[in-house]
Picture (cartoon, helix red, strand yellow):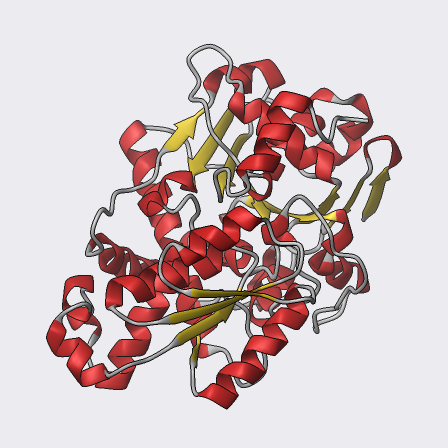
Length: 411
C-alpha cells in the first residue's frame, strides 16, 4: 500500500504481504546469531571496546503515547562518532586472516597488529569510497594495523569529515562526482594501483567483503539483546532503520529474522526524499534493485546513495514491513528532540543520518495526518520501538545550525 502525506512531505509503502509469505523465504544465514557472537568476540579484542549505550527514553515515550522508546547510541563507538568501524575492522581482520591462512580463533586484534603479522603480510594499501563514516572506520583500522589507506569522498562532503579521515594518516581525496560515481572511481583506481578495496556495498563478483562488513555490524544487535535482558526490558515490537545502500539496515533486519523467525519485529526502512533508491525498488516491486539519479543532496549525508547494494536489497525486499521517504526536516526534528530530553531521559548528540528515526516516530505519534500510516504500521500505545543513532555530530557546523538557528524547521 502506497501512502502519501502531503502536509508533512512523507511517502510510505506498507507491505502487508511480507509476513504471509515468510514460510517460503530463507533467513540470511551469514547473519545468524552464532556468527554475530563471533563478530562481537573479535570486537572485544579491540583496544577500548565497550558496548555503546542503549537508552530507554521513558519520559519521551509517555509524552508521545508509545510503550517504550529505545535508542542505541553509536556516537560513542571507539571515539569515532559512528558505528561504521564495526564493519571495517571486522572485514580487515577477515581479509588478513584469509591472506595468511589464519583460523577465526586466531583473529584477535592484538595479534593482527603484531610485528610478526605485519612482516608476513607486507605492505597493503586499503582503499574505499565513503560519505564519511565508513571511510573513517577503514582509515582508523588501517592505522592501527600499521598500513596505509586511501579514501575517496564525493563532492559536497563536509570539510570536518575529510579532516577526521586525514587525522588517521590516511590520504583523503574529494572527487567532483556523487557518491555512486565515487565508488566506481575508487574501484577502477584500486584495480589499476593494486590497492585492496574495502567497500560496504556489493555488486556481482564483489560480495565477500561486503558480507564481512555486514557481519561486523551485527555486534550492535548482540549488544542490544544483552542490554535489554540486563535491564529487564521487553524486546522491541518495531525497529526503525535508516538506509543508504542498505547494508546497515539489512544487517539488523537479517539478524532479527534469524533470531526470532516469523515473530521478528516489524521493520520500517527510512530514506531521504532525494536519495530513496530502496523505496524506488520497493515501489517497482522487482527482485532487482532500482537506481535513482539526479540531485541526491540531503543533510543525511550518510544516506545519500542512489543505488542499493543487491546483497542488502535481497534481505530488505524479503522481510521489511514498510518504507518511508523523509524530507530533511524530519531528521532535523529528530536531532532537536534527542538533544533536548524530557525529565531524566538521556541527552543524545545525534547527527542527521542518525536522528531521522526519532523525527519520523515523533510525527507518527503527534500529527493527526499521520494516523493512518501509524495504524498501518501497527504502532500504538503498547509498542516498543528501537531506534539506532548511527552517528554523532559528524558535521558539527550543520549540527549547530540545526540546534541554534532552527535550520530545516517543520513545515
